[in-house]
Length: 240
Ligand SMILES: Nc1ncnc2c1ncn2[C@@H]1O[C@H](COP(=O)(O)OP(=O)(O)OP(=O)(O)O)[C@@H](O)[C@H]1O
Ligand SMILES: [Mg+2]
Image (cartoon, rainbow, N blue to C red; front, side, top):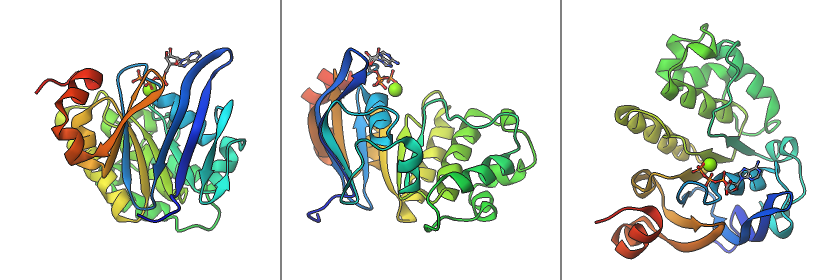
């Protein structure tokens, strides 16, 4: 592991107004890794991603990206630096076509980074290619997830923050989405993956952080976490 991670969340407190959610939260992601943040409903996973992206500002601590303090930057600014957030609700534009959804994303992200073209993105995702002229609203849940990830790709993201990409999807679509996440990573894109589904994390992630009540309670490789029955049972509701 190198000395300087791509992303370092350092002792961050964050929340909503008077409500503190994250407490002294630290995690790091090395360039090229897939790292998971896994925890139960309401543990603070989405709050963590919102704080990294700049939708929320930490009340204490710092967020360092590529050696620079991005703690107080707005989401538009963090996007320009190469971060992309794929939210739980996927937030595509339902009234625009699939192609148009990708075209606008190409203008929002990092300026001249190693983004891929809209055509290349469509070729990457066969299902999307077949529906390029259809409205976003016509896509299934899995296809919407593909489109949301495709948008991060054409935006030239270096670090993708994925919020529960497999939530609510049928098992065979979960497999497709996992392959897409691996495909992103094969392109050199670093991934911070938020999940309630620990099985997805164990399959995809190099390292995992377990979050509970706004605090990191465990860090380990997938092999370590898979073998840690106490952690799995206590924080993730998985019994061996
Ligand atoms: N806009 C908000 N205002 C106030 N509190 C909020 C807001 N959004 C979330 N919270 C609270 O912050 C805590 C953490 O929520 P968060 O959405 O980060 O959890 P999560 O781990 O993403 O959960 P889930 O798996 O259900 O998506 C919860 O107690 C939640 O009620
Ligand atoms: Mg959430």
